[in-house]
Length: 357
Ligand SMILES: Nc1nc2c(ncn2[C@@H]2O[C@H](COP(=O)(O)OP(=O)(O)OP(=O)(O)O)[C@@H](O)[C@H]2O)c(=O)[nH]1
Ligand SMILES: [Mg+2]
Figure 1 (cartoon, rainbow, N blue to C red):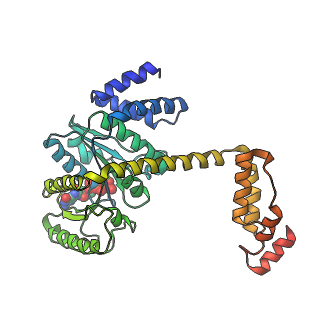
Figure 2 (figure 1 turned 135 degrees about the vertical axis):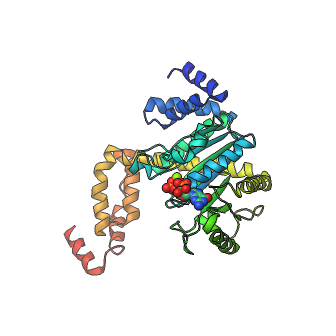
Figure 3 (figure 1 turned 60 degrees about the vertical axis):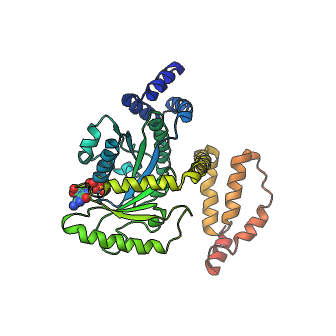
């Protein structure tokens, strides 16, 4: 795209044109080098116009009612005069070709509303890649004037940590019927939560929902809050009939108010940590795709496996070669070999491999 094309796309995004938002996100999701360059230029131009939305991460095990909840919650926000964007971080879509939010059937009403924008997770990428694209999509949506950004993820992998690191508030959705165990969730996810919502508090499940909420309230007593300004709360709701949805929005507003003084620092910390994350990603990628290193890696890795070279020495040799090329100085190798005896393999095997090598 020409620079003029980027500028005109930027202008259309800034008017809130959802077609332009969709087009910008498609550009962001592309892995083509020229598209990446265009996307970076676009994001750079939109960045100063972003930042005003309430960013909410929503996570929960499969089937707890995330899609139903996001629709009910989103419609409530629209009723109170807001525009809502829903994005997804779904590393499992790598295998299934896009699963989160693909079930737009549960969100038809929200999807139909012109004040809402729903974008499924891009398929065929790593968690790091999906997370980066979602952060960029968030900037586009904010520049387009969306007041609330909800980022959905399934709380069974590592994606919830990535999502918690890109939002202001992390909401964990639970449902009764999962028993006392943590509903197949990764341990530690409760510690990420600023708000826990027990869904399906209706009909025959209402009593169970209240009990689960009480259980989590006591569990939270044992966890140190992430911020001195906010103690995580536990609420219940029915995404199906709308009970409790308004209270959850009130809790979001209360959270925003409580964190008013900290939010800038929180977002600044997130931005710098993502920068380092991208630096590490970029370095690993450059290392792993370096043709010279490639041929050396197998040999060095074998020596490390056999115990004739320490892992540290192996890593240093490869890094030296990567950073300084073939001229890398090889001094210290005698010491490395000596260190190698003794670290990994049990004594008998080790002396055998030492003789053999
Ligand atoms: N009784 C009751 N059922 C609900 C409620 N919310 C969702 N459900 C039902 O729970 C089932 C799963 O809902 P979804 O919204 O698809 O759940 P999800 O978490 O998005 O599921 P995945 O996308 O598969 O991870 C559906 O049959 C919903 O109708 C609720 O508040 N009460
Ligand atoms: Mg769903």
